[in-house]
Image (cartoon, rainbow, N blue to C red; front, side, top):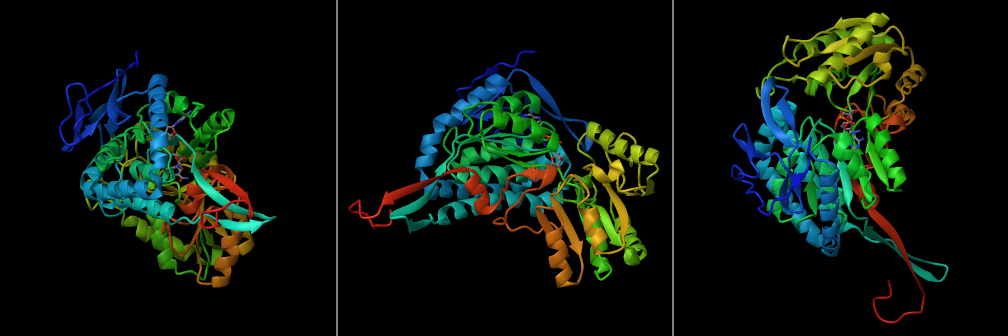
Length: 512
Ligand code: NAD
């Protein structure tokens, strides 16, 4: 199979149906480029991969350009060419363009929602009302933060010291198939605001909304090469990108297994790397909790078919409250509506791909074989479709695979604990540590347990509320490094210390 890219000298019109050389797929009336976006132009590969809709697996959305090492090479070269100009623009110049991009994202939300709903099956209404506008907020937040940054200046040892953020250089961003647009903007925004050109490689199971992001970046006037999108398979073009020694930062979201592979590539070139990896979060319910609120939030874990890294998938309930909690949880879960993600009445979407459905079903089958008790769901909803019923499993023991490994589907486990000590011990008993959710009315317990659980983010009596300036990441196999706010801007920068011997220079404001 040849994967030679065909260079185009004619950038495609982002609003029309494309050109003969660069056709666009019609996805529910939205014209989506199936090609890479490199150096401000659409670039096609001869080889393609098929992209199908989880809403109906017979619905082929597009044949998408399948990048290879040569495409990776082109993209890194384009980013390198753009690096100096983008750095020179400074935080204010870059901020202006990134805010323009944010405005264009807000305007494009209905089209983005149509495409991402068809491509990934996330609920269209939730995309339209909440998820996609977060993409715009990501760009605004980082434009603001980068501009507001004050360099640290102080005197010591007879010198004036100043810490300067220098753009690090070409940054590769690799993202997973769940919430592809929002997660990609979350990682691209700080890199761009810090002055780095970006090469984004979205996941091959949901590549289309990130192609629209390239159109929006183009329309916002980002200079050619500053933002590039490369499509293809992780082990092919993804591996070529992270292995390129000219890349200076790698920002990855995905599974721990891929995280390890990328960390090895980063280590070979001594490139700083952040990995936001999988989760197996505990949702702890103490007997002093508002059980209605706890049960309602626990049932929310089935939204998006449970394909949410931060979800609290291990329900840990204090023994005294167990029966009452389970009754309310079952009632709340009974309200879920499985169906087409385009329908506003639907609350549980299909899974992304037949392979993933098999993976999820395999976990539940092995749980049954292991003697774990499936107390709700546990089967495919409709033959021929990709829906899996909201499922609850009572494991035989804490060592059961269903407790210890991320399923990434609508499958929760239920365990009881006697006291706070056992609650924390169960919460901390997996290799993961991305998020934890605690339900209690006691402030002291919230503080105590919140500090004791091993997780990058802990929510008490709520879930998924985010302040973009807070650090975000995981411990254990859930991640390495922190993104969010200034933590992300520092990661994307080379921090330089400038020291001037006091009294040795003339002119300036004396703060240099
Ligand atoms: P994945 O690890 O299979 O793939 C993620 C991305 O990596 C894809 O774009 C893929 O093409 C690419 N890739 C694969 N192999 C590669 C290689 N050798 N070199 C370079 N790139 C490569 O993950 P997935 O199945 O797409 O996503 C699900 C996983 O992502 C789950 O584990 C989930 O918990 C995790 N996730 C984590 C967060 C977080 O913030 N911590 C958020 C969302 C998803």
